[in-house]
Length: 413
Image: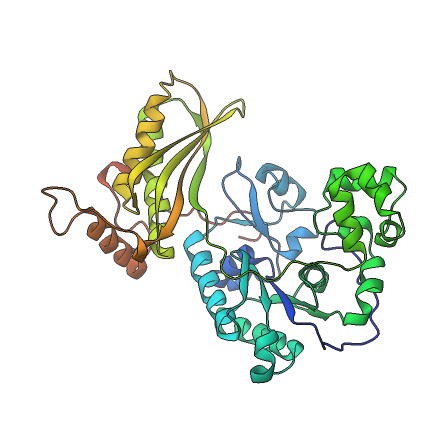
C-alpha cells in the first residue's frame, strides 16, 4: 500500500494549541511545476522523467492511480499508464520555485528545516503572536504558495515533527490536518505499522512476522521485546507509537551536493561521445551551482555500464569553483583515468560536492589570468539562458548534440 493511501484517522477537534510544528509538502511537486507550462494537461495522467530507459521523477495523481510512482523505470510506468503524457524534467524551474517557496517560509519564521526542494519543517512558536494560531499560519502559507507559484501544498500541524509529517502525508493532496496535543496518541495508534516514519518494506515485513499490524500493536508490545527484535530501531518505533519525538526543527540544512546525470537512449562505447556528454553535464551542474549560490571543491563522476555495474570516482580541487570549464576538466580527467576500452556505457553523471556559499569562498586568481575570464563568461551565458532559454549558448563541441527537450509523447500529447 502506498504511503499516501492510508485511511485518515478520526479526530474529534481541530484545537491547535501547542501545535507549533508544521510540515509543509508540495503536492506532486515536479509534476505540478512542469504543468505550469502545460496547463492543458492538468487533470490528466502525466509522467515526468527521462528517456525510455530512465526512471520516473514524479507523476500527477491521475497517473499514480494507475500504479505509477517515483523511481519506477520509465518503461514500466508507460506500460502501466499508456495514455499518460511523458514530459522531461526542468530542474532549473524546480530550483527557482523551491527558492521562492523557502523565501515565503523565511518570512514566517527563521526556524525552517528544508528536507528537500519540495518539503520543510517550520517551528512557528515565535510567530503566533504576530501572525495568529498555527492553523491560521498554515492556511496563509497554502494560499500564498498557490497564489504566487501556482502549485498546491499539504500541511500537517502538530506538536512534534513526526506527527506533523505524518499528518501532511495523510492530508494530500491540497489539504491540511491539525492533530491536537491530546489526540496525538489515538491518532497515531489507529494507523498500520507501514505509516510510521522510517518503516520500509523490510521493517514492515519484520513487524508483521511478529504479529504487529497496527501502531497500537507496537505501542502495547514491551520495549525490550522491540529491542530484541529490531535493535534500536525497535526502541525508536516504540517511542513513535506513543507519539514521542524529541527532535526539534533545525534551521538551514545546507545542500551537500549538486549533480546531473544522463541515461542514454542507447549504450555508448565511443569515449569521445561520452566526453561530449560529460561536458553537457558539467555545464548543467555548474549552472545549477551558480543559480543556488554555491561553489564546490570536489568533482565526482558516475559511470553505469550496460550490465548495470556502476562505478564512481572523485577528485578534490585546489580551490572551490562553479566554473563549467573547471568542472568539466576534472570530470574528463577522472573518466580518462578509467582507461575504458570500448566499454558499453548506459549512464554518466557529474557531481559537485563540498559546497560552500560562493560569497564566502576565497577565489585565488591565477598568475597572468585576465580580469574577465571563464567565470564571467559563464555568468554571461546564464543571463542569456535566463532571457532566451537554456541552451541558447553552448560550447561548439555540443552543437549538434540535442540539448532541447523532446516533445511530449503519449496518448494525450
